[in-house]
Length: 426
Length: 145
Image (cartoon, rainbow over all chains, first blue to last red; front, side):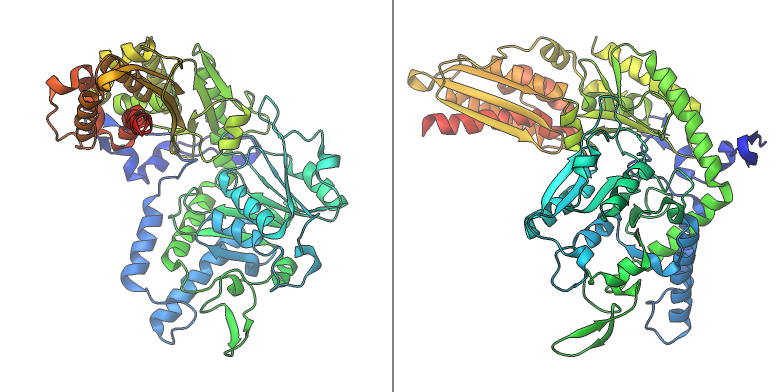
């Protein structure tokens, strides 16, 4: 059965989708069913992705780009096809702007290492004392630490947007924060803790005024919303495969072609070169300039299959489904006494990640009992966003994150579990 | 309901009503230990008396029920005991926690701390249980040197 939702999008058929994810019907020790509410951490994989990877490894595998035989040609074609698929999926103007990395962290580091690098000469990437880097208080550690390291290497100053009490980016000081000394601003498109979707256009307008660059960590956005990087108008976007039904070990950097061309290489090695002498080298054109060594071949192909799967479901339907789940969850969690949502409590500019605290009960105890007693898998801790937790004066939160295969019944299980947790600690 | 073997009534009691909590004067040594993976932390002070007597173990901290209850139980076991005796308990407690649930605990040595036996089956939580006990061991070393 399918139903129409607004905009002519066919609502997704959750039962059918769940059949593609065998793990969702497995039994945990003690006969508990699995309730997987941890996709913001890493998503599960459909059989189509697993089968594509198995088939490639079994019948077509070889190294890419250099092997002069049938298998080499087949592997190269499959690997490069994956790049085409990803480029189309995110609305990249050119396939050559899609750089495969091992994860989003590497993509962020790749850009950070382009700055203040004597191997490059482009003015936009020159960085030293007096220059400024801007991030935000809601960032994942992977969008904090690379910039801290860059500031240490170059003497530049690291600054950040604060976060408001309701979990929004505080833009009130943007005029001072983003200024003529700013070289790059790098923020999350969607927060991995708060669920907040940040106002990219507002930030971008200021970034353009001052001639800086804007990078997005879209690890939590690309898996859950239709993406159109060209329309976004930013300079760089990092995201990762394992949160969007693909395997781990494959991430993506998208960058505007002329910027990627102007940047020095990140890692040196095979396949990223044009010619090598003993004392110097010239480099391959992008994207290969940034793909040193044998890449994660089968992982990239798996990501291509994940993109095919998401396209078949339709990202607009994925977004609508998660929006309905988030509305349901926010309503249901409101009924639990002592529960405080950390992040927006309305659906406005918000994705399907809901973090909360339970008064008097540590998140590790919450997570343990939810898992052991109800098979509910959530994430507990600071979710690699310790500064954000310090901002809210809490050591940790419990986080439920939803994806296309989740149901309202699973949110009911979470709520039942939370009531039971409160009973244990009453 | 596997967790029930971990969340023993005694652990929950100590968590809800921690014994000897709060930092006190005088003390011979103060240590601060942190579990970086979950952010649990504890500050612990030890005051020793004549003949290796442990006069007071005071502490403050934050964290999950397991880490906080372990500190409370430790306070009860150590206060009024001796350095030698308590080191024996620490040793047995560590052996139990690191035994992956395969170690038969010596209840005569452990006393109330035997309630933590179930935690050993949860590798991710063993560090929670050990936090206060490792801090205590560290504080003893610093008190006597």
